Image 1 (cartoon, rainbow, N blue to C red):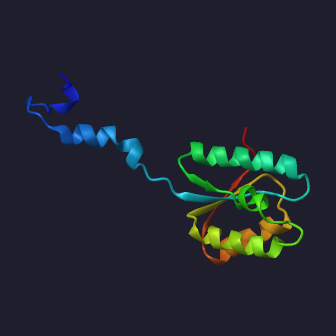
Image 2 (cartoon, helix red, strand yellow):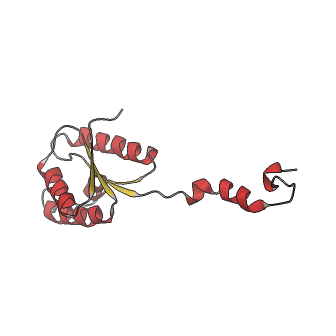
Image 3 (cartoon, helix red, strand yellow):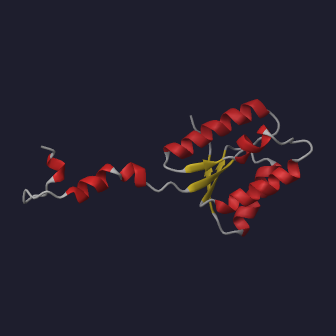
Length: 129
């Protein structure tokens, strides 16, 4: 007998059981924009962006890190302006902007300024392990 299916009176009541069972499935995961450096030490910055994205996921969010996506098929040298434009579109879909690290690159500064103009929530996070 599965006692979770019964209420305090002993009557079968599967509704609370189903609700509890499906909490993870129905959990709301807001979009957060991962704002961190890309250019410069690209390999290290990509590794950090992956770590920052994992951190956001572990905190119950869907991380949006365009600098992990667009360089897969776009050239930073010849298509940077277009990629940044795409970044701003994705930024607008997010609930918050999470700025990681102590260094603010020019691209990050542009993203932060847009977030400020849009009255978005901006969180500054020093470093994560």
